[in-house]
Image 1 (cartoon, helix red, strand yellow):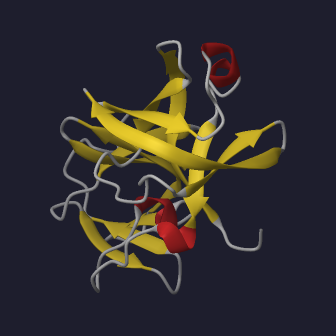
Image 2 (image 1 turned 180 degrees about the vertical axis):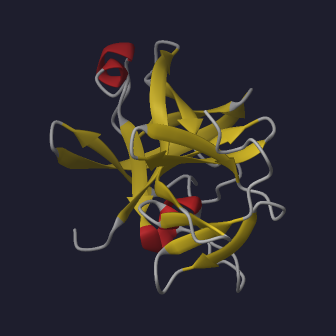
Length: 170
């Protein structure tokens, strides 16, 4: 497959005896996980293509059923894997919006020009999105809020932040 794959969540457990799986979605509001959608699961250095038969919200997770996965034993092999979809399956965003996966690898600077590090990942918390920024031997959790994120420059792959006092101290 030539099109980039976008990780949508981690399969964390089986559910019941009929092949259902529990998915911790990276974006619980995603519309890409509809019945009939082609999904990919990373297994031992390869991507396995499957079809999503059904999905249903379950607490903070999604229950998913993959076509031709009809038993707990067949489902168990996917626990601990990441479920992805082709980038074209994602909703088109409004101007100025972006998917968090698109900023992985961006270099982060303060408004004063100090280099903070590289965005390694993003994570959803009850308080909002956080960017995990690795800078040398320090990790920083940067809240993804307009009061701190000053500018995201996609052309130069940089993010400028205006951190409040203490945010970068460790």
